[in-house]
Image (cartoon, rainbow, N blue to C red; front, top):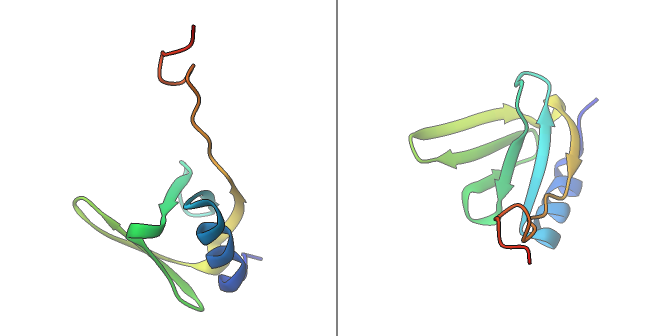
Length: 76
């Protein structure tokens, strides 16, 4: 299943950040241009306390995550 590495790179570059669902993790992951390396078969995310690596085949969904004023408690 999974997503093609080229498609993943393109979506990340287009939006600067990208949410993904990975079959082996319960919670979605947020990818950022500055901390994510996407190779042909693997994704590597540099976290504050280590590196998370998984196969692109394990990605089962992607979406663009947005933030709103309401999310930040700043709405009028």
